[in-house]
Image (cartoon, rainbow, N blue to C red; front, side, top):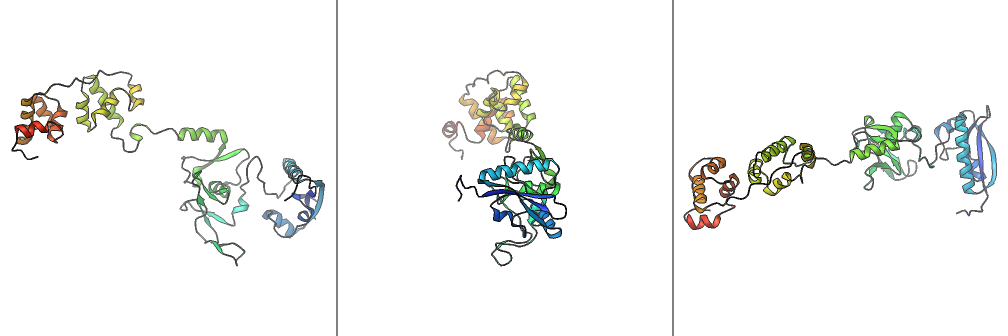
Length: 337
């Protein structure tokens, strides 16, 4: 651990030996700056230059704290890149987020839509070279799904961003990757698009809008059914009549009548409806006549209701033994329930 007053850090350049071109900007202790052989976490482009023409060390600033060195390194990288200097630095995790460079992943993964994450391993992966524990098998799916975010990730890299980088290259600065269909599990190339953060948020809000009407899984009605029910209300149909025709509970029909369900269509229809019919008193004789017709004929509920003069819903409920059971038991004792 270093203290804030530890000024043993520096910022350095690695320059090509053939033309003195700066190819790498780094920060750290002097021992880190002098390491030019081997990868040391640097890019493949850097290694290629070292292997072909070689590099030498140019220590630019010394006597810095760790924070000062990091800030200066970042500023120099941005300045040199803006000047068109072809640096080989991997982008560090700064305020603009971590970098997803094709060269960092193309030796490890390949794109495969059949993989849950959209990626598979190119080769077996071990903890230490080829002598350590086997961490991943060739052609196995890459990554795991986060319970918190719903995204697939590998270590702390998002798999959908790796897929995008492997196909398109690095995401443009200031942009993020959007799933066009709103499905975080779908990391297919065609489903990924670089957009601004604002556009991504706007699309997310649209995709979060709740489903309505027949789009809701398990909906008992369609939009056409609801408009037909409204027409029945307008003609004076009771809740019970509508309930029988559409196989609904009368309480649900009441909610439809008052715009408490399918509210978007109720508003669109633009009318209110009269209260449901008052319940009509049914006599014992009517109940028995309807019961006998149910037992001895093949008439429909509607035909029986019209013949006897009671509501269709009462006939339906009588047929299924839901009402008037005491009267039937008393007046038709020989009937088997």
